[in-house]
Length: 316
Image (cartoon, rainbow, N blue to C red):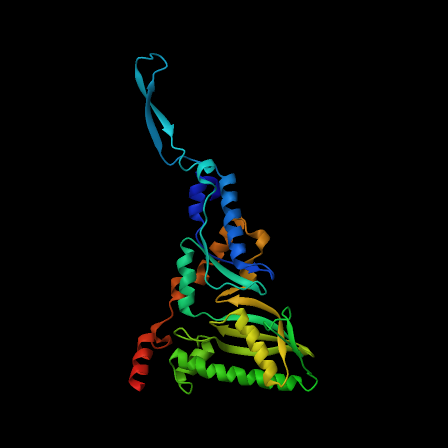
């Protein structure tokens, strides 16, 4: 495909779609996106020749007869790389991660920006691996924060931790069915839960869809959390709340996003692999993951927002 292109502008325009990048901890998402824009634009500009989009015509003295004017075709330099700079590659992120967290970040280029925004309205769930530590509390609920308190944790067993995790999951699932617009005791709710489609149909507060304890080696523990409308800081707050429920304190030591919608860590590119060739291949591989059919769930998935608003008005 690349050998048949004519100019850097044409190559840049073909780079359109959705792909995922694995963000390491300690890197700001905005700086990462700016770096990707710069690197892709410079690579495209340096690799492919500049072709003038239009020409200017001037009347100049003829070399054979200075008294005669001849029409000369002069290429327009308005869009030359030395005048305009390297090719611009628009990149957009709907679900960023903060600097302390790591994991899958979905990005959209050109036409893919619309699909990334549609993922927000589709209310896709995300999956995280969150590691925590009992016995301390900090100002930002992360182990890197300022220590405010130290507590004991010898009384916390794996059974008690699993019980609290199960309790929090059940309480959030009740809210999930409410925002999904189905009765928790209905057959519809059961079928949606079996298909993994039970999620909010409207904007809602952060909700946990599923949560389980993967490992507990006091004071350290690891949770797998599937949730919607969350932020990494909200997950750290959740770890803090778990510590309080167990009559202790807890902080987060690591927040890693392993899935964003249909994108998993296996689909994500490393920062060092974010070159034109690899990005173009990643976009092609992920087209079936962001088809409009998947981005627009069926109408019977849940009731519409307007129905909820009208019902709330009647109840009041």
